[in-house]
Length: 132
Image (cartoon, rainbow, N blue to C red; front, side):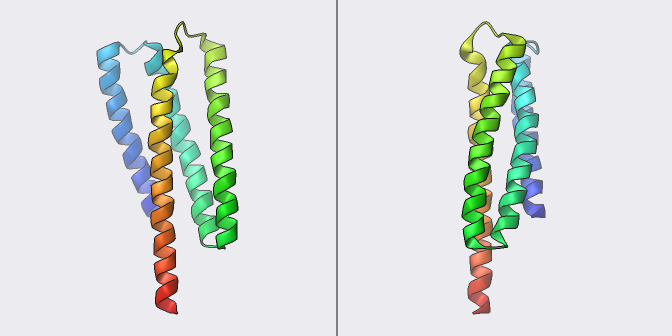
C-alpha cells in the first residue's frame, strides 16, 4: 500500500510541475489554470481514498474487490461532476474550455489508479499461487 501512495505523490508532483509550466505560459489567473490547481488537489485526495479502499478490499475478498471498485468508479465520477458543477457555479467561466484540463487530469489519475490496482491484484494472485 505504501508503494501506491508514493507513486501517487510522484504523479501529483509531476502533474503539478506540468501545470506550473502551463501557468507560466497562460498566466496564473487563467480560468483553466485555477481549476487545474483545485483539480490536482481533488484528484490527489479522491485517488488516495479510492486506492486505499480498493487495496483494502483486494486483500479481503475477490467479490468485495469488484464491488468496491464499482462503487469507487461511481463515486469518483459523481464527485468529479459535482466538483465541475460547483466550480462553474462559483466562478462562472466565460468559456467551456476550462473543463479540458480537468478531464485530462481525470484520465491521468484514473489510469494511474487502475494500473496500480491491477499490479496489486497480480501480486496478490502471485502470492496465493506460491502458497498453493
